[in-house]
Length: 280
View 1 (cartoon, rainbow, N blue to C red):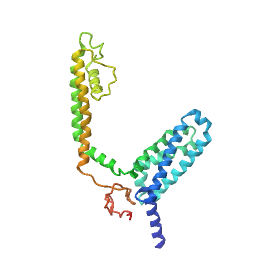
View 2: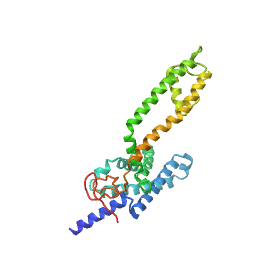
View 3: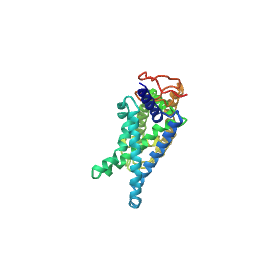
View 4: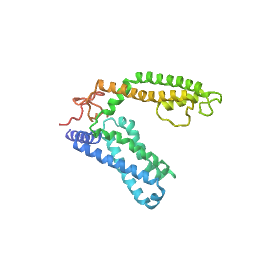
């Protein structure tokens, strides 16, 4: 019974360090992991430089093996520290961790396996998990919720913009087509004119199509000014949703199902009801 209790305590402690950042050990683990990820990405980039790779092949290979082994240990530790390993293995980050770790092992058994080097760049996605160390804890989650809550308004707004571009593009085609059919200005058809309206309204301005008539240039000026106001509208919609309600969350991760985003005063997991690893 005591041995089982010690085992549970050991797993619980390992879970706190790996999955959470509310303790000094957890923060240190994430900082070390971040350094490894950055080092790995640098190695991947340097390997793509043929002149550098040919001169430092052994060093790059040794460094990548050390990083791969450390990531493999971390992957195994994440599996054994959670009560339901499948929750991590088949999660988004679990799949990313696996895909970013196996290329080096595959290269041993499969000729040309080095082509999978690009998969190691997936490790960069793991930085998002470590960003919970920052003071903006839960900001990404609030933003995602705000986008979801405002999706109907944004969809209506985008529909309005598309309709407006079609109308303005059609008007510009009528204005610029003239006797030459728009060959000089580039407004040779309504679809091309609509493309120009989209490019202009979004303030991209490739310059491949441009009005040449005074009336067309006047309409284009109005569309350009209108574009600045249109760009700001989605930002205002999302910001409004974000300020309506914000729940303070922390890095507490459920030791049973790995669900995160628990509120600061939560004692139990909102998903499965298991008691959380609380910190003093």
